[in-house]
Image 1 (cartoon, rainbow, N blue to C red):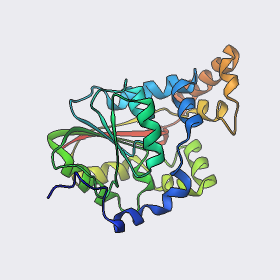
Image 2 (cartoon, rainbow, N blue to C red; image 1 turned 90 degrees about the vertical axis):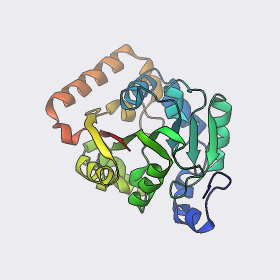
Image 3 (cartoon, rainbow, N blue to C red; image 1 turned 135 degrees about the vertical axis):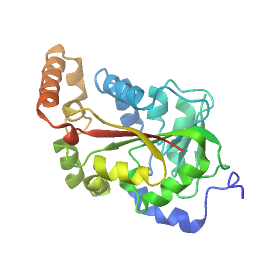
Image 4 (cartoon, one colour; image 1 turned 30 degrees about the horizontal axis):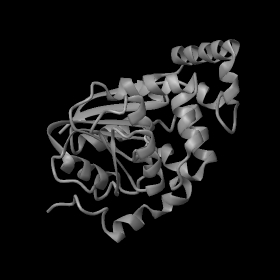
Length: 251
């Protein structure tokens, strides 16, 4: 049965309604911080490129928000982003006219079966009450042999742990581990690789809009100091404690 015409049942949308208070509004300043800040934007671009390149022909970004991930991938023409919140999608449409943005739930994606060759899922799974159900939908819309790329924070990382315990909407990060993600994805896909990325992204805190100072990014001394600390963390922290886990799989 086709699902291309709708955004999902009312019951499905209510499942995710608890996210609206934390994530329903478009955050233009945060988007520009992620994409334009001289330090944060560069780290984000390298993280996204490492996780999601090379791109396949038909791309779906699940939980796309304002479109920052697709921005860092060059706004690939014809790529599709899906998100629950229309305000975010309206913002994304103005920023990335080369892509298409559709409202829908991860539990009931509004697309035909086998519509995509690559599905990107970033910072979504830890928010979900029923991740297996969401992955069933991802599998449905992914073509045979198509690629799934999941990028998630790791709850045991010191910075991610602090983020989770100080932000109620991010508590799901605490359950997010490489082993959890690999088991979850392997139950429905063939896992190709699992890798750790960004040992301790201090730049996100030091140059943060609220808890740090974005303007510090203009200081060569501050950039060098943060970079040195991050490199030291990479040498000291076990990879299982690095901030991000990337799992690549195929259908």
